[in-house]
Length: 192
Image (cartoon, one colour):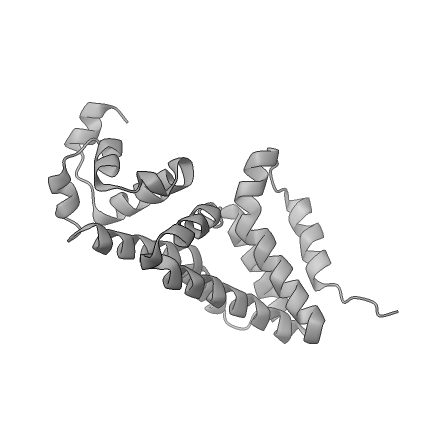
């Protein structure tokens, strides 16, 4: 987008939040400042204050945006499918995470939360909700005990870091990769 196009465009609150998430993932939390974001969008501080009371208000809204768009909406969408079995909902979740690149901000948000006490509890809550949602699917599929715990932990770890790991490795997750991953997670472990 050219500088003139940026200046002529009116940014909505959602635009600010989307741009801020991208800045966070590309440049780090030190660039989540009013000046930096205004520079990124090519607007004045007045535009920022037209949408947010102050930086703390902005940060709270940014984390709420991330939680809603990259967790709550997806879990709700999957649950609204009605009578799907848990195993089908798990497969749908895996596909949505990859298709929508839902983990693309997770590593950056986690790192930011370690430095920004204002968001630490909210970020922890989002990851706990994700963990409990996935754990519930595995429990409903029929897993229990240590096997339930390990499957849940590995599933969440892989899917929360997937975007960062694949960017570094240059990999693309193919449908075959997803199917292999799905079988790995849903095939019961044979006890010795």
